[in-house]
Image (cartoon, rainbow, N blue to C red; front, side, top):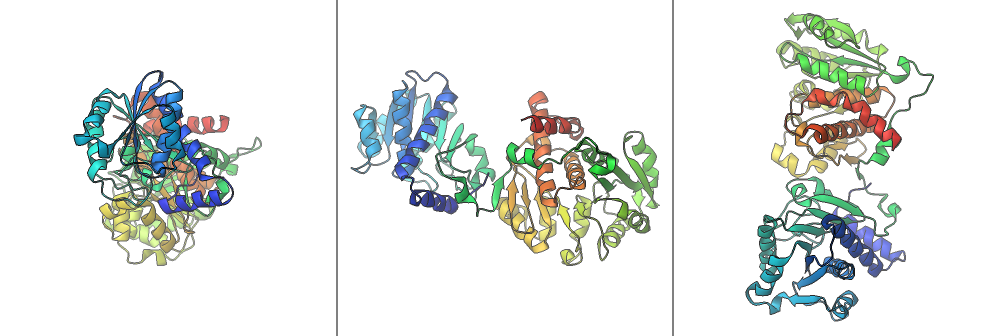
Length: 514
């Protein structure tokens, strides 16, 4: 499913209308979708007092349609208009025909009537401002929404029409008065700002309503939301006559004396997403420790410069084995000692390698090399969190977080690498300028080691023949869904990385059975 900016959505709307679907039909479908979501959220709406805030434009028109349907279904609906609607507004005429109570802000001194309606309402529908040009909320808009936010603390349910008023559809920036919606019903396609903070916190439960816009009108949009449907069709095939070679081989170079667990988690992630064979290349002294926990992998013990620290001499040991593997995973828990840094640089630069998945210390070591991407010619997936992305790009974390999709896309094309910018609503950008966004934000995944599981999962999928961009996006999605499954069972406090490992195959199974 495509994710759009406000301008892209306007162009798609206009193209739909020009192709023969009247705007009035789109509005009818949109308003009814809001009414249906409101009814579902509230349960029995018979005689429930619902206050609909009507803005001056099409968003207000959607609200009028929703109000009409809710009234017809038995709710006690009241309208509060920020200004008079145009005299030829048919939806407003249909509302008046039903004798639905309507108050216009210009005729309500000190918002006295508004306060009465709000105090008795169980639900407010925010149909004030749509995806038009974002501007500071002032005057009657600010006054209304500030009061709505106060009432929200006392169990008032808020439904936003297309998006919460005051949320920037492109950046996710919000006005202080922007409501914290419990439900947002957006039309046609999700908006980019829904997956950026702080706006993502104001959306609540997101419903993407089909209002009759043909999908092909968004074909040129280069940003997509990852869905179950896409993930299911992308999963690697598992033929009955397969052997372990059918599912690819991953060479994982990971671990150091301080980060032994990272090697375990990365290798386990690759196994759990279906790789046929995983080999762990690690410092010789760590191999017996890991062998007691990782029984399903093979080992390539590497020369050490000190206890648990890989030596630069290990480069030759690794390169001699590379032709036997489909994917090289490098970086999890390696550390950044002088010896390790020399090893990573000598391995990565100026040599032929299989496709790479680079994480953690491999990225931090890369960041110390000016214009490293000009020396790293191999096809690679990079998996930085915002701090690592800041080191790789020289851009402050705050700026990266303010434009996650834009920054990831910009550097994926510049570096000609697949870039996974981790975090809530992880972004996957490709060298061709395309972008996928995970629909998942889970604080339970903000714990040590979950990134190692993710990196391993991606390497396991890539080894099975997926393109690097598909392996990256599918790995992110499976990892996120596993996190959601663990959260549903135990909550998001105390979730640990190894909780995800046995759940990954179950997530894959569930997708296949959908």
